[in-house]
Image (cartoon, rainbow, N blue to C red; front, top):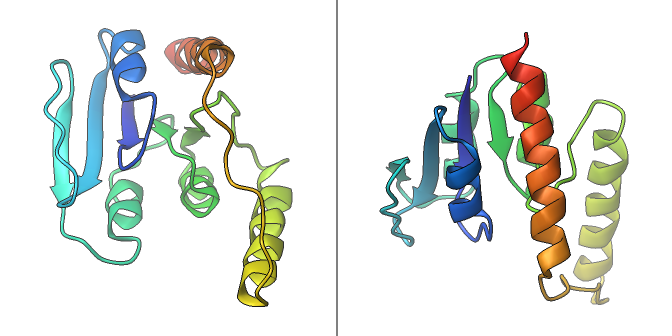
Length: 145
């Protein structure tokens, strides 16, 4: 098992590294971002549409944990038997991913038609706590497989 982080814009990079003691962590980002964190290996990918997402998907083995807020990447990770989780602690599953992808699609349609959708709220300490609980749960589940 390893942890792959979609590091571009990820607010829980440092928390993920801290919680992953003893597990290999890979921060995957494009050339517009620079990460140099102790306890993690940084993989820098050239810029391009979904370049980082595909680089992550190509590195997934069954049981790997993927930290991402991208529903499309989460769906691809599930197809590769990965365990995707978002920065707020939501664990993506086969049971919830279709609804989330549909919600994303509807939002895109509204924006294309000139409408507006809500952006993300300011991050709270509670979201970090929820992420920590869910992430630890995934680590334990994969540890005992």
